[in-house]
Image 1 (tube, rainbow, N blue to C red):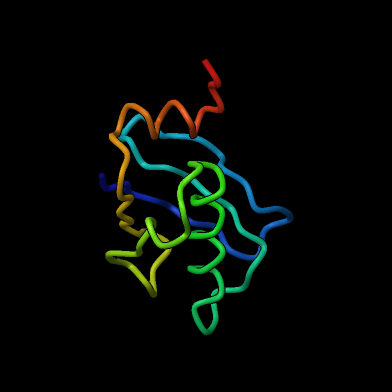
Image 2: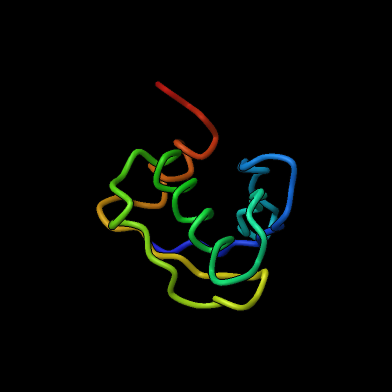
Length: 89
């Protein structure tokens, strides 16, 4: 499954802000956008929130941009959206 992201680095906290109407997932991370630190923070956050191993979340495009594409193995889009919203049922 692929997700489109809009990342804000150097924020106060690592957090999922939510999905836009266009289906873009907005994320904030505390890491600075240098040496790939913000990208790694995004991947760690998504891995934790989605409950998948870190290796199952990969950056597919946008390494030097705030707009990114990531791919998540082993999960369909409906399940990912449910977990991103924090639904436990």
